[in-house]
Length: 112
Length: 113
Image (cartoon, rainbow over all chains, first blue to last red; front, top):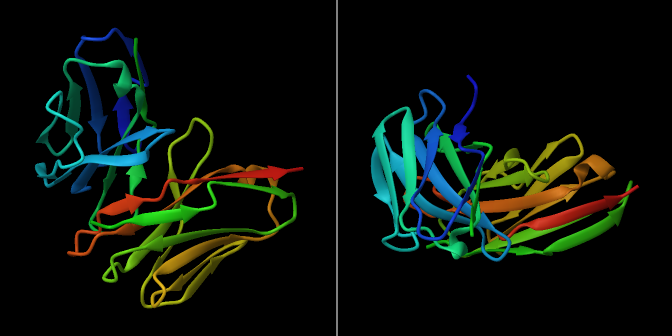
C-alpha cells in the first residue's frame, strides 16, 4: 500500500478563497482523522470518521470548515472562506481499529 | 476530554547522552500510550507504544515507562545520535474504547554532534 495520500502538498491562496484538501486513507482502515498543526497550538484534532461516518467534529474551528467522507477511500476538508489564520499544515491520518495512526505527508496551506 | 501535558518543550543534548521526555495525562481510564517522531518537514510516525498492562517497553535505544498511579509516562532515548534530532509527541486516548488520541505539544530534541 502507498500509505495515506494527501493532496495538494502545498497550497497558497488569497483570503476569501475556497480551499479543498483531499485524503485517500490506507485501504481497509476504518478510522480517518484530520489534524491541523501549527507552532502555537501543536497537533489539533479537527474531526474523525469511523466507517465513513463523522463521529466527532468538536475540533472544527468554525462553520467555515467542513469535512466529508463520501466513501471508504476518499475524504475532503474544505475551508470557505479561507482566512490568514487558517495557515497551517493539515494532516490526514488513518488506522485500523485501536492503535497506530498512519499519517499522510500533510498539506501546507498558506492564506495571504 | 483528555488533557496531555508534555515536558520539556525543547531538549538539547550532546551526542551519546541520554534524553528523557515526560508526559502526564488526566483520564485515569486511558490505557494506550504511543510516542510519535516527526522529522523536519515530514509526517509524524509511531516509534514506540505501551499499553497499561505493562510498566516498561524497550526497543533498542528507546524505551517507554508508564506509571498509572501517577498518570505519567516517559520516553527514554539512550546513546543519542544526530539523527534522533526531531520533534517527539506523546499521546493519550480518551476513554470509551475508541482510542482517539490527544497529543502533547511536542518536544524538540536537538542532538549536537
